[in-house]
Image (cartoon, rainbow, N blue to C red; front, side, top):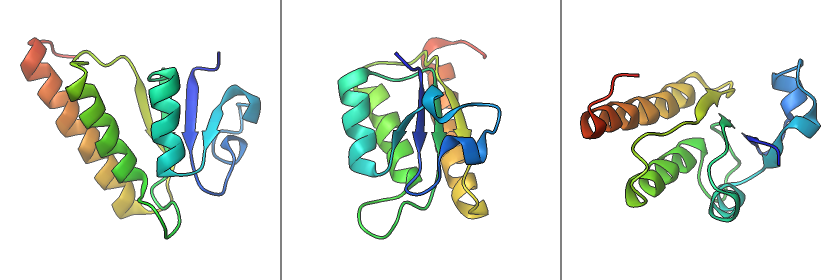
Length: 115
């Protein structure tokens, strides 16, 4: 199974990570597809986020917040996944990075670890 998840409503991984093939990634195009993928397959080792996902159902930070809540609800306080943000929206990049920064800080407090 591919252990990389690429969230973007338009572009392919090859556009953002030219060293990879599109076949190296599972691609999801929306908030709904993102949630369905995680619920069905679990959390992959690498997730790359776009922020702007179109007008209809949430953005990349909504996906990030949902994933954080999923981890907390399932007591996943030692996350072993890598977060990448490939969005061209600087404010969106900061929002997603901050969501995970706060989550990883929380995990450090809960587990007493310093990654």
